[in-house]
Length: 490
Image (cartoon, rainbow, N blue to C red; front, side, top):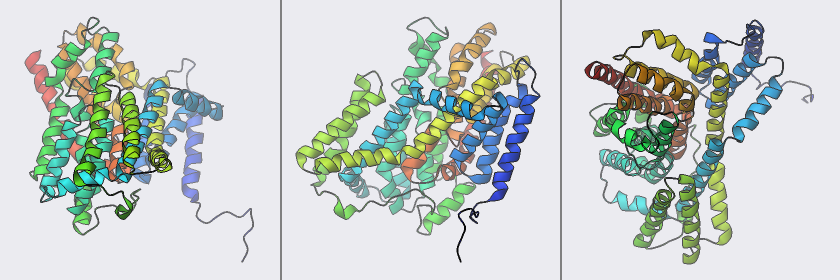
């Protein structure tokens, strides 16, 4: 039987196509009914709601994000979607932050792939194998490494997961639980340490928004660390989970049951198994040094260049290439191929993060953040402000996936509000940073969620839904904490 070139493949599912077409027509119609002043009001929430619903139905983060982006563009300019999408894509790709993320993630992926192919990661894992006797010790070690790698959440998400996944597989720990432990010691730890990329960024942002005088941003940041309640709550909860005092909840229970049955890696995971028999052979001490030295150079160079992970990754990559070449572990073409393959592995996470920035740009044009803040302003008081700031900004970060970019818009509103109500500035900053960490931790398309799942070897949605109950637990504790602090410090 022959098939005409004009025939429709059976695999096309017409219901989603028809649903998307109806959605596009509905959004375009609503946009045409908008008043001339382009005050979108509650409609500014539509793209974020669609992203969440689409993600729940399809469990495909990239497709869900693009659905929300297109819906937002139809609201903004229904008559010329193509031009709007092209301009938005170009603007995002020219964004300095996105360029930084692409280079950092790509180079980190290349460096870690180089360490794996050079046998260094295996050497480090073998060293730990002789010292870790069970799953609890393995999870404790994972959490401990996560706390030690405090300089940046990207470094944490990729390096710790790559180091520990062979060991967690050995003790039948699901990749989802590995991703949860890694993610819980990424952003939550970084906000608590003043020597981190988060601290440097937010300290500068506080000075720009006149929360403090020039040069005092880091001092205010340090004063706010005791009030960064979500960081402390997330560390407490992950510690209790690792110790077994908090059991597996919801989807995590199913993932752990699968792992105990001998399948720690989920079936749909984007995992490539490395053939360890083809790895270069070195002495255990040399293999360990070949792992620790590049990591030390990465951290040291990042610190030297004022907490710049891009420059640190560049220096560490060159150092590792030279180190392996001099030892004869890999030929020149193998070294370059390892770096490029590692970069390619990071393309999907980079695409998801870039799409998340497109959502942020659309939401900014729709005025979502100011609308939400204006909606709750009548309820504000000195006692409730910290809790409301946490809940409100966490929702915005969750909706946009941007743990940093959203505060460029919100800080000029929140800081004067706190000053006018005479609310403690360290407490307000603690609420803002807690919201950023929680929103990033809970959001299924945030950079830390995507990178933790990629490094651990599970799907983004699989990691997000297994982690969500624990993140919500930490969020509830944090909200309660800010309510109490608001009443105590008012």
